[in-house]
Length: 358
View 1 (cartoon, one colour):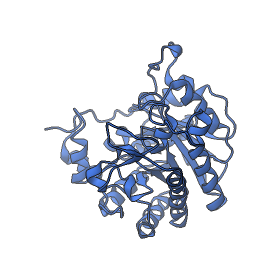
View 2: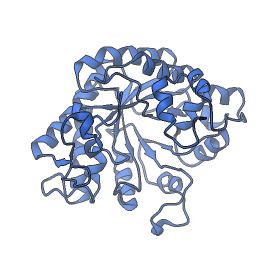
View 3: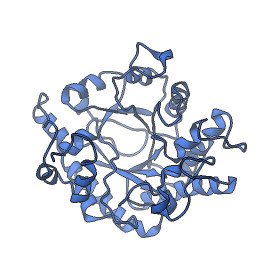
View 4: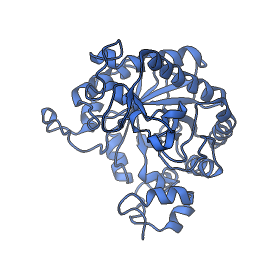
């Protein structure tokens, strides 16, 4: 049997029934107050029905001022628990693990959306973001932890902390965006400190078998590739964590940093020393052949994003025919509606060049 269809055991909680994980995907579908909508519920549960071993929510913001997108799911208040509970129960009823991704956009929160200047690790002239005080950094940490507790109460199997793609945790990691002079700035150890403290808080405040993962990305948004490798190594050897999700943009591309020329990003991260933490990757894995090629590196699972938008049942199709040919782009609005996308989500996908037919 192909590795993609074998179960994956974590240190904590239930195993994944296969190695297909739904990537956390922005979709603009929930209510503006962060409460789960029927449209988002339908989109996610349809992927669980389609055979994904783990179904991840979109980025759910942990502070009201951390909102980064229209119609973003929220986890910043107890008013969200009812919807999150409904979602977690439905995903799990399909035999899929239910995980929520926890997020704060930081300087990438549009001022017109949140009604005030955005916040970040340091002042940012381009976005108008102001630096968080040390006390506010600790409140941000506590709000990530509180959001994880809500997801635990809602019945999720676990959460993923979004430390990638230039959002607030990533803004702390980068020397370009973090010029702080307190304990949260300076050395990589200090810039990584907020994540360390969130991990510790989640582990101490959630149930013992609650799964905890982190998403990181190399390159872009001021992230140095060598430092990304060092942060990934820290995560992969941290027994408080269950998994590390590396969002590589394109798993088979070579790094921009010429120091690492001759190896793909996938090779670099798959080759890191690690303990019991499981490693998965995302980035332009769109066909069964690419999925098999990726999983044959020393990784534990793959994440599907665009491929899962296009085919809600990619894993089930793979079970039936490992050589199936996915739909090609562009696709019609009718096709995407049949795949469980609402008009709002389809409108968002129409902003991606070449995705939706005119």
